[in-house]
Image (cartoon, rainbow, N blue to C red):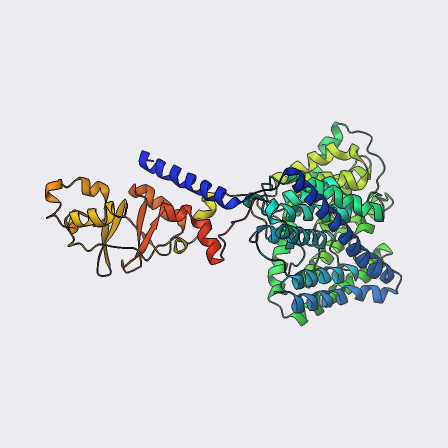
Length: 580
C-alpha cells in the first residue's frame, strides 16, 4: 500500500476514534457501576425465583401427579399456550423463541427499547411450554428476562455508562438469570459473556457480570436453597485412563453436538413453513406418543419436562446401555418436537441432558470406571460444544454436581469436543466473533455515506476558476467533473499542480482530468469504497450508477462520521453493537 493510502487509513481510524470518544459521554465511577450491577442481580434473582416457582411448582409439579394420558397431553397444551402468547403479545410468532432471545438482544441496537408486551409474551410462552412438559430448559427465559431487566436499568442509568459499555447491564442481567435458575454463579457469568459469539467473548463486562451473577445466585439461594442441581458421588481424582476416556467422550460429544445443530436447523426451517394448526397437531401428537413410549420402556415418562430426572435415572448403573441409548433417542425426538412445534425455552439444559446420556454410553465401555464421571464429562462436553461456551459448561458441571474432582477430565473432554464442531452452534443468532469498528463500518451499504448534494464543475471550466472557487475557496482536495449527468473524472490538487500557473486561466478542466478515473458503484459496500480509495490514492471517490451517470461522492470524512449518520437516521449497521 502506498504511503499516502496508509496515512489516509490512519487518519480515518483516528477520526473514528475521536468521534467515538466525543459520543461516549461521561461515565460513572466503577463503584457506581458495580452497585448498579449488584442491584440488577438482586432484582433478576427475585424475578427468576418467581419464574421458576410458576413453571415448576405451579404447573409441572401438580401435573406430575395426574394420570399418564393427562401428563402426555400436557406438552400439546403448552405449545398452544406458547403459540397464543407469541402471536398475541409479540412482534413475531416465529420458531426458536426463548433459545436465542438473549443473544439476539445482545446484538440489537444498544438503545433499543424493551417492549413490555414482548417480555410478557415470551415469558408466558416459555412458562407454558416448560411447565406443561415441553422438553426445553429454564435457561432461555431466565437469560432473556435478566437481559431485559438489565437493558431497562441501563436506559434509566445511562449517565453511568459510556457508549463502549452500552450493553453492560444486559450481560449482567443475563448472568444473574442463569446463575439464579441453576444456582451457578461462575457458570452464569461465563455463559452470559461467552454465548453472544461462537469463537470470542464479550469482554469489558467480566467483573460486573460476576457481581450480577453472584447477587442473583445469593438472592435465589436464600429463598430456594443452594443444593447442587445434580449431586454426584465420586470425584476422587483421575488417572491416565480417565484422560484418554475424556478425549473419547469429548470427540463423540462434539460430533453428536454438531449433528444435533444441523438437524435442529433443518427442523426449525421446515417447521416454519407449516401452518400453525398442523404444526401444533403434529408436534403435540409426537410428544403424546413419546410419553407413552417412555412410560412403557423406562417405567416413567422421561420424555417430558426439563430432563432433570433423566440425569438421576442415567446415574443408576442398573440400567443397561441399550436402555440408555433408547432414552437418548427419545429425549432428542422430544426436544426436536418441542422446538418444531413452536415451543419456547432454553436449549442449554437439553444439551446437558443429552451429553449426560452420551457420556453414560461411552463410559460404559470396558475399563472406563464409574458412570458418574462420564455423565459429568459428557454434560460439559456436549453443552459446551452445542452452545460454543466451553468455560461456562465446565463451570456449570462443577457447580451443579458438587464434584470439582471431575473438573480436569471435563476440561479435556470439552476441549476435544470444540475441535470437531467447526462453525456449528444451536444458536442461529450467535456471531463468529467481534469485528473492529472499521470492519463494522465496512459492512454498511455505500448509500449510508453517499453525499449527493455536492458541487461539481463542468469540463469547460478553467483550472483557475476551479482552484479559486473549489479547491482553495472550499478547502477541497478534489472535485468531480460532470458534463450534464455524465461523469468525466475527478480533478485533484495533484492534477492542478501539473499545470503551470500562467496557463491555468486558459486551460480547461476537461483537458486535464483523467477520463479513466476510478469510480464506485451505488451497489458497493463501504469496504469496497475504501479499497477503491486506496487504489486511487484519493480521499474522495465519485459514485456512478449502472449507466455511468454521476450520483455523488463518498469521502473518508463521511465514513469516519458513519456512526453519527446512523444514529440520526435511526439505523444500525450489521454488527454495530458494543462488544461489552
